[in-house]
Amino acid sequence: MATGDQSDMVTRLKALLPLGWFGSKTIILDGLLNGLAYVWAWVFSLTEWAFSQLRLSTMSGSFLDIFAVDYLGPNFLRKSNETDPAFRSRIYGALVPPTGTRASLIAAIFKLTGRKPEVFEPRNPSDTGGYGSLSTPAWTGLAYGVAGGYGSLNLPYQAFVTAYRPLSQGMPLMAGYQPADVLSTSTIYAPLGYGVGLGSYVDYSQAFDAATDSDIYAAIAAAKPAASIMWTRIKS
Image (cartoon, rainbow, N blue to C red):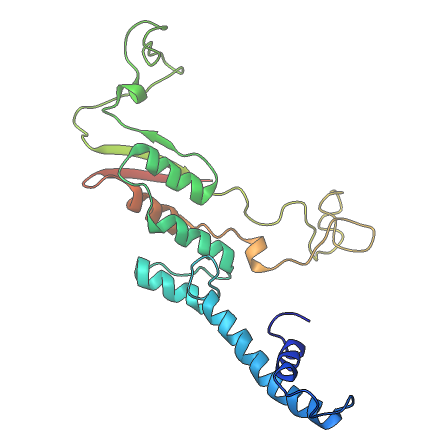
């Protein structure tokens, strides 16, 4: 018996009845009280569910979508087949994100893709390198194929960003329904069947990564400093 369920409600209702009014066997009374308890148990569960929708940490379903639109605007939508925990995590990250710095830009892309991007600022000596000693400071000692890149003072407030798509695309090492002659040379990717190959039923969220190129561009646009230009390329 759990708090608020039908049995609990019957016990609570019986506790309110005057002593001595009923005998030890109360079949008709129990039926009546169970009918009332069923309704009260449903009301109690509905109340608990309603309370859970008042906090982001416990929200679920459409209430998460409503919260996202209210606080983050109509463009912050749930992705196709995105679960509640995954959507909630994105909402948390978007509520008060660090923005406007190189570090925040890198962090935003890394959080989305799981891969650290490359950022090159043509006016930043730490990126371009410079002619000097190999020991002090550490970013000097420019050499072909070693460090740095061509810088330019004509590109203020601009950077070149190379972002990488997530690695978790598809389902590696999982067999599929294929004729035997297609994959006959592979023991790992053998056609699915008893005793041959590795197989599993998967859903869309497992087979395809949620981060698209559009998501990466949007993350860069949200995290970059104001009035800056991020020349972006996306690679696999």
